[in-house]
Figure 1 (cartoon, helix red, strand yellow):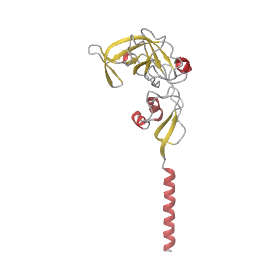
Figure 2 (tube, rainbow, N blue to C red):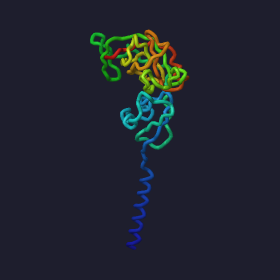
Figure 3 (spheres, rainbow, N blue to C red):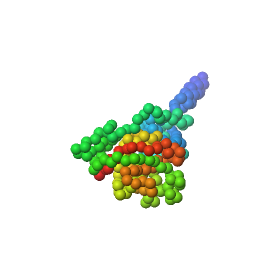
Length: 223
């Protein structure tokens, strides 16, 4: 009788363990296949995780070079299909210089919690280009100095904006660019980029990038 009770208790314990294992959700890393327009910001909102956590889980990926087809690790997610993509609202307006915290007296501008010193502002006409060979003079997906093109690269007229100059870009709107102002570097040039003109590199197909069109934007020339 004693042995039967012990066996019964053991069986119940084992059954309880199995049920507990089955009912506890298993959280593991999942993989997101990037689409054109994805950023770490939009993915953090889509999956409900901190952007810093997402960036740390993808140390080998530049936040400025996320393109369609790129595999991005989503930490702490259940191994399930990707959540529905975040839809861009058509009524969303670009972040303009007027919405930034700007001090003209001290030449300081603040964006997304960071403070930048700038020497002057410059109003320019902007276009955008992709890595398509037809838009890069046959040189491939590299800038004027042979570096791989990435988000944050802009083509300039070096007589107006010297190569290597860092600028804060404001007033733009395109799903392939950060919604707020972003920092870019003058690392490229183009035969049609003369005077107060810049060309912004955006990862993605030529068709996707072409929707940028022509936009009037304001640059803050950073010190």
